[in-house]
Image 1: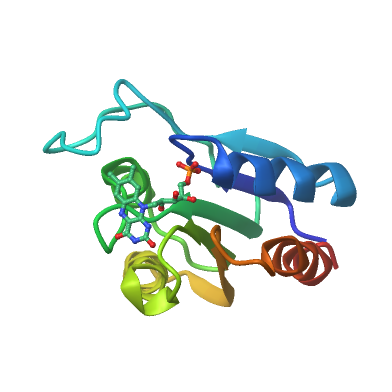
Image 2: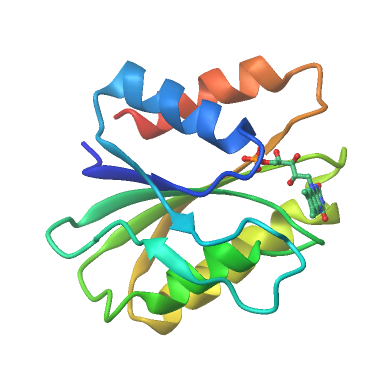
Length: 147
Ligand SMILES: Cc1cc2nc3c(=O)[nH]c(=O)nc-3n(C[C@H](O)[C@H](O)[C@H](O)COP(=O)(O)O)c2cc1C
């Protein structure tokens, strides 16, 4: 079983997926908190950074901002130390109908930071918030990440 769900959410979409996953799977959940959620801030200052020190299998969820990583998710991931021996599942929630309009780029950016710190990436999942199949996609995410 995964050890922890870590997420950032500005307007609640990613949070709702993370919480549903936690409720169904029993995996503990922690939110990344910054001094500001303003997407236009130059650099985000993190006030609560969930620890990955004593865990080895972690899920990280994030929204997409401006075709890439929100400043808060980026600052959090960059603040992590060496991730040798740790595996991550990544998911994003996004608005535009195609994952190629930000979802994929965000997952790739998250993956790049984790790999640069010697971590491993397992599942990468994007949830299109405007899709009619959204609830089905969330159910599939929960099934995949609850194992
Ligand atoms: C400043 C800003 C920029 C965004 N840029 C994108 C984008 O480039 N591509 C996309 O698909 N969605 C974009 N979105 C939509 C969010 O990624 C989407 O609504 C997401 O589900 C929000 O998650 P949250 O409620 O957890 O914050 C943007 C939203 C905001 C507020």
